[in-house]
Length: 118
Length: 108
Image 1 (cartoon, rainbow over the protein chains, first blue to last red):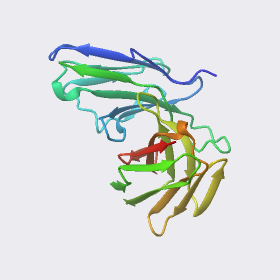
Image 2 (image 1 turned 90 degrees about the vertical axis):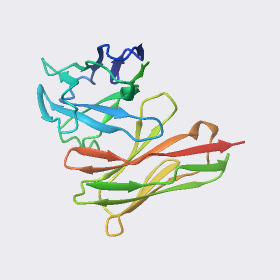
Image 3 (image 1 turned 60 degrees about the vertical axis):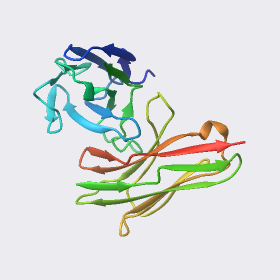
């Protein structure tokens, strides 16, 4: 079974440029998460989707960040314009709300996109 | 909110045992997770505790005391491939809050 797929793995841009990240969750997982991970820190939630609805975007800096999950499957996260402080790893995760014994809404992560803003 | 504390670094010898402690303060609790993250890779799920006690999965075990706001991850028979960051995460509703991670270095 394929895991969470993210692309690109690495992205280098100049400040003030736009950038977009793509995520394809595990098949059948209705919940999708975008996290930000700074070096030496744990992931921090940016936004959570239930199917195509953003149910928690309280931590998303909406002046420059946007996200969409139009068909309730794959998702994109966009930054426009990027700032130096946005350099980090952007992780996508997915989980299933189906109550499968032992699953307990475990979040499965992709390998992330490492963004460097110069 | 959640305050989650875990040591920054630990070093151990191949074949030994290491215990990574995690303490948390939270206004709500729906379970505690441990993830392993190798450098440049995805965090991978290791264990989940929602009730007090010990959960054992092969060489890895995780313990939870909800009254003390305390958990530990026990890694036995350490192997070189166990060198990684170990993340403690507390769930409240559907939201996971992570600690900063503990970098474990296994030496030959």
